[in-house]
Image (cartoon, rainbow, N blue to C red; front, side):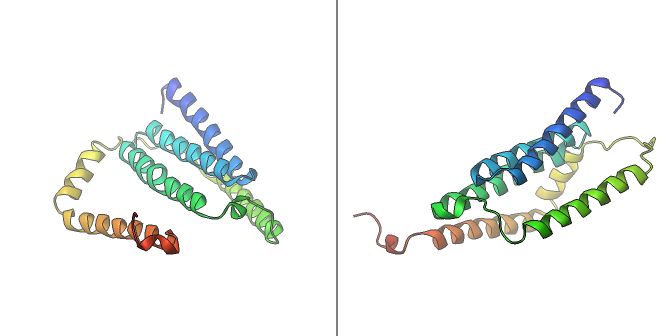
Length: 170
């Protein structure tokens, strides 16, 4: 990343990602927390784009934003209203200590690591190679995984359906 614009974009996206991630933990409303989580996921996808990892960026958007975040929103919407507030519990202090230990370890590693950039060329056409494998050699496992995910979604819908909904429309 020698281009000044790419470096500036990287640091702006990094600040947005970290700020949104801190907001996820800080807000009390779960809906707002999920929206901030989506912003954090989008920031990570942007970071992948600045690092020329195009396929990983698309996967980040499709899986994390398109599937996981939407699944969390569905889970929040389908739970009773009383369970939506992110209230403090008895695990607040241990979680704070653990977060401080993880942050300290990450800061230590960031300053202790040699961040020398290698002279190796970047990856070429990652999306094309992965697409050829998914639609060629690994087509059957890919389709099995998609059917498994579809059945999990249908099962989740059946589990949250109200008791009297088996009869159908009147």
